[in-house]
Amino acid sequence: LDEAERRRVLVEWNDTARELPRGLVPELFEAQVARTPDAVAVVAEGAQMSYAELDERANRIAQFLVGQGVGAESIVGLCLPRGVDMIAAILGVWKAGAGYLPVDPDYPAERIAFMLRDSRSVLALTTEEILDELPAGRGRLVALDDPLTATQLAAAPAMSPGVVAEREGLAYVIYTSGSTGRPKGVAVTHGGLANYVTWAADAYGKGAGGAPLHSSLAFDLTVTSVLVPLVSGTAVVVSPAGGAEGLAELVRDHGGFAMAKVVPAHLPLLSELLADDRMASAARTWVVGGEALPGAAVRQWLERSPDSVVVNEYGPTETVVGCCVFEVAAGDPVDDVVPVGRPIAHTRLYVLDAHLRPVAPGVVGELYIAGVQVARGYVGRPGLTAERFVACPFESGLRMYRTGDLARWSAGGQLVFAGRSDEQVKIRGFRIEPGGEVQAVVAAHPQVAQSAVVAREDVPGDTRLIAYVVPTEPIGPDAELGKAIREFMARRLPEHMVPSAVVVLDALPLTVNGKLHREALPAPDYSGAAGPRREPSTHEEKVLCEVFAQTLGLPEVGVDDDFFELGGHSLLAVRLINQIRAVLNVEVPLRVLLGASTVAGLAQRLGSQKSARPALRPMRIQEES
Ligand code: AMP
Image 1 (cartoon, rainbow, N blue to C red):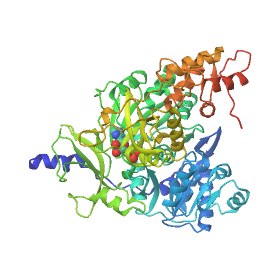
Image 2 (image 1 turned 135 degrees about the horizontal axis):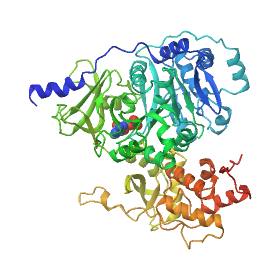
Image 3 (image 1 turned 45 degrees about the vertical axis):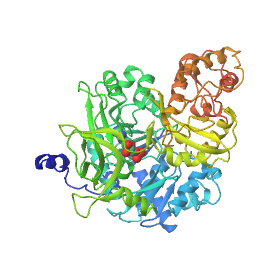
Image 4 (image 1 turned 180 degrees about the vertical axis):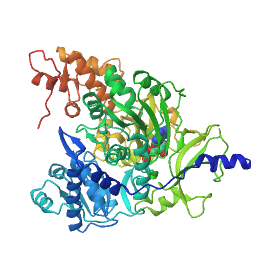
C-alpha cells in the first residue's frame, strides 16, 4: 500500500466520528416517556400498554430488584416469555443499575442452569410456569407472577429508584456458541449499546408503525426490534408464537411496520407465505442481518415489495448487533452477494493481514472492528478475551475485536463479506461452533468413541448440521443409536444446535495426514424409519405424506416417519404448516407439530379435532394442556 491507499482504507473509509448519542438507552426511553406518555409502547396478546404504563411497571421492577440487593454491575437473568413483562424487566434491570442476561425459556434446563451459574447472575426473573420446569441448583429465581412477588411489586414505589447508568456500565450479557466446548457470555456496555440504538433509530425507526418482535431475547438481533421503537415513540408488537411462525403471523395479520428485523432465510420464506398486497405493506425497512445476504433473495423481494428497502446489516455480538450496513432499494443493481457496506457512527473497520497490516482494496484479509461498540469481553474468560480483543495498532490505548470473518474492500470503499477464517458457521442466522461446543456434547455420549460435527449444504440454501459418530463397539449403520444420540443432544443444546442427522460410521474418513477428510464424509440418508414403510390408510394420512415429502424435498414419506428426524427444522415446519393450511384448510400451531411430528400422529390430531363441516377460516387445532 502506498501512503494514499493506506490513508484511504484506514482513515477515509473509517471517517465515522459524529456527536456522541444524547444519552444512554434507559435515559432515551425515559425522555420518550416524557414526550409521549400516552402513545402505545407495547402490543402483546391483543392488549396494549402505553409508554407511561410501561415505565411505571419497569420502575416497580427496578424498586423490587434494588430491594433484593441488585445494583451496579449485578447481572440479572431474564427467563421470561416474549411479552410486556419481558420488556418492562429489561428496563427495570437497567433502572436498578444492573445488566440483563437473556435466558431463553425454551433452552434445555441444563443450559439455563449453566448460563445463570457461569455469568454469576445474582438472581433471575421468571414466571411460575417456567419455574416448574427449571432444575434445582440454579441459583435465585423469582417468579414475577408468584402471589408474594406480585404483591411486593404492586406495593413498590412507581418512581424510578434514580440510579443513573454509566457509559462504561454493563448493559447486557449475551451467550454465544463457544469454540472450546462451552458457550461464552459477551459483556456489552451501555455506551456501545446507546451508540447502536441511537444510530439505528435514526436509520430505521422513523415514522409510524413500530416493529414486530418475534425472535428470542437470547440473540442480539432482538435488541433492534425492542429498543429502536422504544426510543422512537412507536410500538413493539409482540408475537407470542415466536420464530418464523410468529413473524409470518405478525406480518400477515398486522403489517404496516416501520421496520422488521430478520435473518436472510426469512425473506424467501415470507415471500412464499404472503400474498402480494401483504408483502407490499408488511414493513418499510427490512433490516436483514446475521449471515451473508444472497443478492437473488433481495432482488426477488424488491420486485414484489418495491416500496420497501432492504438493509444488509453486519455485526457480531461482540460489537453490539450491527456495525456496518448496505442499503438496497428497488431498481438498485444487486451483486450475487450483497456487500455489508460501510461502518456506522463511531465504528472503524480494518481488513488486515496476519501481521495486522492493512491490505489493499480487493484483497481478502481478516476483519477487525474498533470503536465505541467493542464489548468488554467474555465474562469470566480473561484468556479468551485477550485472544479476541486485541490492541489496535492504529490508535494507541484502544482495543479492537478480531472477528474471524474474512472480508475485502471494494474499489469504492464498500466492505464485502468473504466467509470465515475458522469453522464457525451460521445456520438460519444462528451462530454455531460445530467442532467446539456441539462436538463436545456428542463426544460426551457414553456410546461414542469418535465424532465429527460439520455443516453441510446438500440442498442449496439449506445448510444443516450433521454429526458423524463412531460407536465404542462396532455395530454398523444404526438408526436407533443415531436417534438416541440426537435425543441426548437435544436435552443439552438449544434446538438450533442439535444436528439434523446423526450418521453412524465404522470409522471416520481420514486424509493421508491423518486429519478428518471432510469431503469423504457421506451425505446423511433421510429415507426415514427402518423396516418396511407403512402406507397411508386415510385421506388425511395420504395428503400429509405428500405434503411432508414435498416440504422436505424427499421422494416419499411413510406414515410413521417423523418430520424432524427426516431433517425438518423450524423454517421447514412453517412451510409445512402453510401447506397443510392450503391443502386441508386446517391451522396447525407449531407446538402441535412438535408434539405430533409423524404423519400418523398428526393425522390423528387432525382427525380427533377437525369439524365435520367445511370451515370458511382454517380451523385451528388446539394445543393439548
Ligand atoms: P452473531 O454474533 O450471532 O451476530 O454472529 C456474528 C457473525 O455472523 C459475524 O461474525 C459473521 O460471520 C456473521 N454475520 C452477521 N451479519 C452478517 C452479514 N450481514 N453478512 C455476512 N455475515 C454476517
